[in-house]
Image (cartoon, rainbow over all chains, first blue to last red; front, side, top):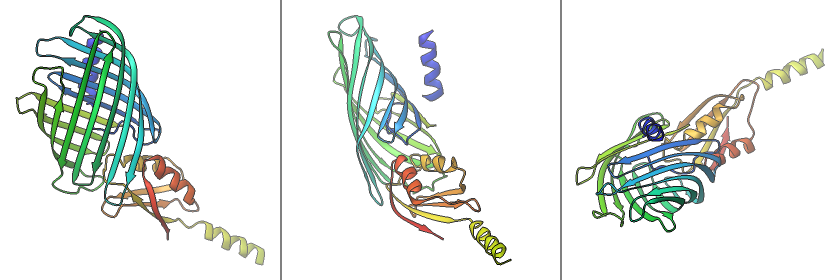
Length: 213
Length: 90
């Protein structure tokens, strides 16, 4: 039943987040990032403009079909924000705890933890970000993921108009054989909905979705 | 009679709506700024709210006879994740 619910959630909200893990006070962010080898689904509620908490379902599959998945309760913190006239920059930190299940090197289910940091700088036409997350289940599995992005928007869209971006994402996961994935993608957002689609240089599909409620 | 006229005069003065322009720093992403519109739209004093990313302006029209103080405006903008640079009233 759980896989079906997760699948439904993925279809409905399909992202990880090149979304800010903390949004406006009282706002909820639902996000899902999906690629062939991993999916990351989150729901986070910002109870303060610098703090959010929520749930994170993270699944990672290696080339040989070995799978690791984490179900976590997350706490996200906006450590620092620079609001300038024509740009904004942010540093976030995240932690989480929950359950991990894996059959990578060892098979089993244990307590799982998450630690991460991410930063971004953006204007209305330029975007850069860098993030590092470590998923750990002691004596079971450790998985890390490093992602970097650079993006360009061809025009400055008005507040209530469709915004388009061309982006390049590089992802490094040392636990897999092909540990670097470079993915050109398109990002669109309109009002409170964001969606992204792309394909890695090796032809792996990439699909994101996010909504702020 | 003078008292009645004075009361009527004061009442008519209070009936004016207010146009407020708020200069906001950091407002570069329309999706992220949706919180500003959502928060202002939720308060009864606000008639219309407009966000202009080009000018970095949030324009608020109040209902007739109602106004919003600067502290409330700053609180809403701050809770949306931005900084208020300036508030102008017409």
